[in-house]
Image (cartoon, rainbow, N blue to C red):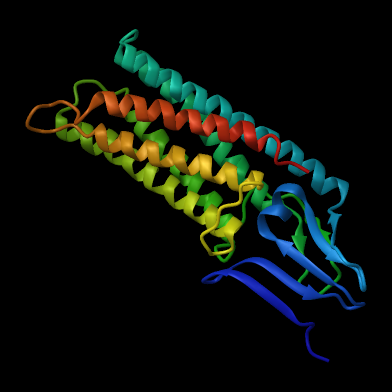
Length: 280
């Protein structure tokens, strides 16, 4: 006999939802974000009118709870520190070194949140297509290479974005830079980091919407992705406004740069608070 019939949904090479017939009858539906964040898979037994959620084992669920709490808390604190740094810069209550120090501290929390988010993906319980409707827990790993998974790709791009931001934040401590050096060492990494954040957010939308445009007002996961993507857009606005013009030696618009950073960072903090509730 051939493999049980199954239907895959997603975008391009990515599968974000998979439906298949169980060997003993009934159907199972695996959704990428639901499985890796909440550790559940939907199973409808033969003849049953509705599906029920089958949970992963306690080892996997404990992992998911702890990693989710760590990542969410890191983004809440990181966003709050970035907002504080922008507030200090806008109100003029601190010098450049003070602002850079606050931003750098926030960047460390963003680094932590980015890597823990990747660990969430790597160590999430996995489904067995065509098999019984259950999730399987694998041994703990600190790294993996799975570019065919949209959730892994989104998390990796996010983590790399936080690392690029760290380069920008370190360079901001340098003194006596020319305008060209400021744009090359501080502004350029900032823009690259913002682009990576936007790409990561787009991939997260691909995952939760299965490759289509969607608005899911009752989906906590959708709101988390949307709020974080809004934060990424505001960070990009800030980066563009922070470009130093060679002719004048001043930023395009320091006020827009500071306020966009403050609002964008607040979005990441809000996203972190919401993420605390997206757990098993």
